[in-house]
Length: 406
Image 1: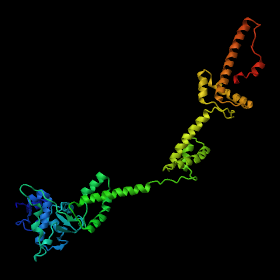
Image 2: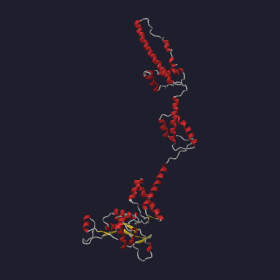
Image 3: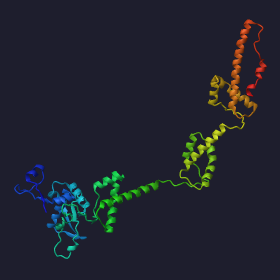
Image 4: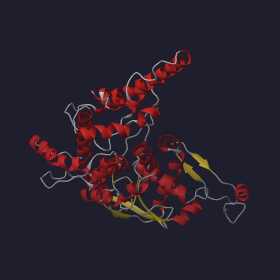
């Protein structure tokens, strides 16, 4: 197998400030990695994996669950690999776990003091041998190339006790599914407990964690929706609209007595339908507005004769009609008191007082102009003929004339 040697010389180390060998004549230990392995899993992953694999040659592993486990201090790795920091070591080791190459049973390296790891290669088949199994010889086995092919099949492994999702996965959950980072991390403990209890292996723990978080997020959203869902109010004879609903209706000048009288009808309508609407108050407001519009329209166009009231006043439409007939508005308003007094004293009932008032105003307007015209004519006649009449009608006729009211 071909290899590439990475040497960090003393003069280069003095330039970048990294610790070097005490002797300037003997360079520090070189790092060796396989080009084929680097092409398969990545350059950084290949360097770290082969460096961890070489530790099995000098340290005694512990066999647990069929794997050979080693513990290495973080400070040792930082001295041996000075071009990386704790965050880099955590990132690369997580990448090896995701690729199914490495097993880790310790907290993340950026916070833990040591790394407990095992190469994802079972050593149970060596149990009959008296020699200590060394997984180093099998480092390249899962990645052996055939011809020009560098693809490999990822080995499935158990979920480590201190497994944690990658930052890329947390970012993906936030951006694509709007799931907060803290919510995803809160699901980690249950996720690890569940899968370690089952004892199953997997090729892609991150994908399983993503599915687990999305399922929990949907359940949480459904629970919140159920909590805020308003339960239908029982509709019985004691039901009454809320104070807010009453205030809304009274703001539109709907009479309170009319509202109270409409409640039994509203209750009976929905009880006969056999349904119980969730938004009773909104339904009631809509019902009252429709009924009030019908009521006011019927009252405005009522054909039943009725007496005139003391507070009667012609609507603006009536005054506009008179104005279009070239009758002065102030003149029309001046006739209102006389009109009301006359008809209240007569105690008569009519279907339309507006029509009566229009007739009354037009009659008096014509009478006024007729008198003015007659006065002017009589004045001219007096200048030419002293025997001319000053009035065509007597004062008694004017006072007793009620033809305008017919």
